[in-house]
Length: 423
Image (cartoon, one colour):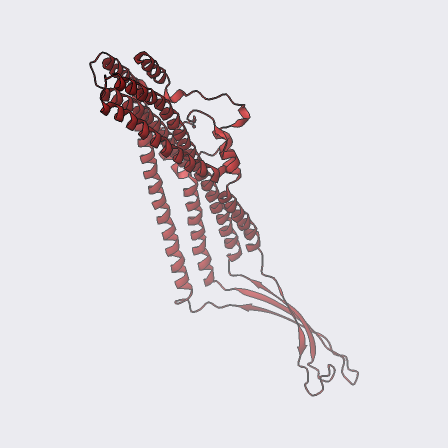
């Protein structure tokens, strides 16, 4: 019986967490991370929204550069109300005219430029939305992989504890073990079953989260085994240098430019707006047959911004404060991204060190310790509790190794978001 138990443990030990056997499936049935990323990006409604807003701003920029529509004037002038006759009075006219307004100073050009800055802002926000989608998808993918691997590891260890339960029952029946050992083995098996239930709950949670990004049908497919090989990241100094190119900062730069143009637009209010009015008056010949010439009128009208203290001055001051606020907002955003970069890079490096420690030393130590505890128990040099404790430690070490790998992949996904990696 002990030989059978030792064989079971040896089989479990031989299976490393990072190399679980996966049933062979057609390649088309496996969902790869690259495919999931493309599915998520193509279905990204947030990015599509910003693209629509950018296109709208582009059209508005063209419109803002145009002159206002001319105004048509049509009517009767100096018409006598006693007879309403067109030929009774010499000044009676049928008037046709047009008025064209011209905005103040460089208002049209500045409005078009401000709409162009809105195009840049919306485009940058769309790029940031795609980056966030990739970051969320990758984190969800890694979490789901971790819980799938956790289920594999716990399932393998459950086989071991089933063997332990059988052995303890046999040993108890022969009088070699007490009832406490039997109950302990059954308890540990029950705890493993509960852990499996929790693991499957987590799987369902992250499978549902994956469906949010790529749809339920694709999320239900089997994931490609192995933690993904995400693109490499540069040294932290290079990452920090490139941080200014992040879409969130490019969007902030576009808002700063829009605010600057807003100040320039407000200053145009000190300049006069003007309009040109041209009209033509048709006159009927007099009742005595006297020919009356038609009249042509032309005039220029100007706004006179003379009292600026409580109107133009206030608006310029308002726009200047908005500009200062947009600069401060950009600085705050840069500080936020810098802090995120430092945190993610430190976590990525430290998790790398811990992952190496587990893969090169701790995993093997835990397996050797479990096998040694069983051997000592067979030689009456250890208790049954020592065997159980060593087996649980081995399982927890395997799960912790996988957890560290998952956390490091998530930290790398955050770094890729910060450097603006879009596939």
